[in-house]
View (cartoon, rainbow, N blue to C red):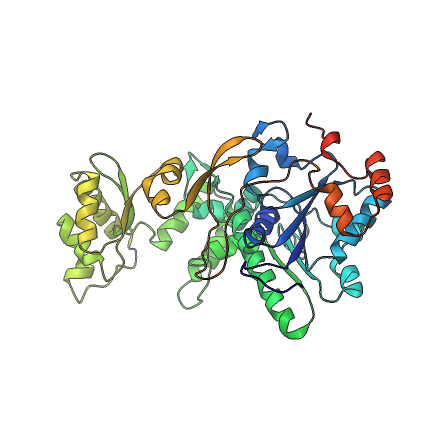
Length: 426
């Protein structure tokens, strides 16, 4: 590893075998910090190049998760392609993968094989479900894991009896951040020990983490959770009914931690125990949890909570959104108008904090994107503004691992690697 400069990950070299969201975004987090990231894509081009394409070969999903990387298309179905991949991997500090189960070992770049030759190497992997159990090594995308992990139900969104997935790729982006943390930690450990290691996470683990607040069982008070599981598995009730029973037991409809319609919009208010007395006073609600020191919640809290929630909803409807927010904020009660994602991205607040930036991408023109998601007071960490065109860095990457011009020309002629002139998007 080269000497660290003023960029967070200067001197770190990373090889990415990334697909779709999770590992590509993880690798981009390192590229923002100055790591040299080399992305391997299929000889036919990365799948996301055609995903919401702005122009041929430049898809929206490719651009937003591959900024700051070098790119090389390789035919990993050939012996020559696999040899190149292995040579590249052994030249790197870190290898990242979320390819289908078994592929990495098959092409000769599995961790055990690489570590035997380069014990300093760090291998980071994201799977869908992990490697053991009923779903071990099962192929998965974000929405599938949202369903299997309960995250889809936690979102509480239903279209009739059909639960709705979240469009934000929650498990993909969360697992990307988790893997980036693991890899950075492994790099830190390597500074002390001189040895790399294998680190991993999964979309399923990311989903459990996102549900951390309720994904727990304290046997003293949570017998209902086991009973709910047994009831669902034996009685097979409609899913919306099961979700409603769960919601009732969580008492998740607390009136002081909720979303409300105002006279001209919708607001979310979160007034936990120290604050919900002030919220009750603003709305003119008598909540015995505030006014009666001897009050204890009934064994079945649903009627009590439903009555308070109804009163709160009716009271909030008499307020204009701006007036209510101003009044709540005066008492320190967290609240916000419910906004569309586009309002947040293009709004004054994101711009004022430099959370987003607009720039000219060399292929598709003006683009507005979130900036790098963390800041350092004395280190350079900033989002790059370009993503590699198909085969843009093929020749320079191959030169970097010591191939001669004749060898490179032969690989290009045999279509083992791709160059811009061979782009399938012309």
